Length: 161
Image (cartoon, rainbow, N blue to C red; front, top):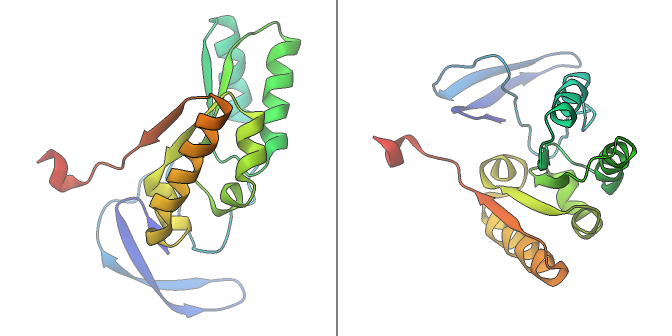
C-alpha cells in the first residue's frame, strides 16, 4: 500500500492487522491517509467536518466547492441539493481520486459542474499506467458536457528542489 510520501510492503496480514516494512521513508502526519490498491475507504464523501466547512462557505458566499472522495453521483447531488436549499448558486467540482469514482465516471461528471483529476491519488488507487487514460476520459467527457476540468499534478520533491 502507498501513502503520500512513501510506500510500504505488507509483510504479514492477519484478520485484524497488517504488518509492513517501510520501502521509502517520509513522515506520516495527521490528516493523511493510506491507499490500499483495490480497497476503498468506507468514509462518507461528506464528513461532519465537511458539513461545517460547507456551512462556513454558505455564510461567506463562496463560488465553488471541491468535493473530495466522490464515489457516486448521489454524493454530488446531495451537496448540490443542500446548496440550492440554502439559496447558494455555488458550483460543485468533483475530485476524481478513487477507483470507485472511475467506475461511475460519466454519471458523476454529469451530476457535477466540473471536475478535478487527482493524478497522484488516482495512481495509488489504480494501476499507474491507467492514470493518463482515465485523465483523458475525464477531460473528454467534460469537454462534451462543456464543463471545466482541473488536472492536479503531484509535485515531486525533485521538481521543487
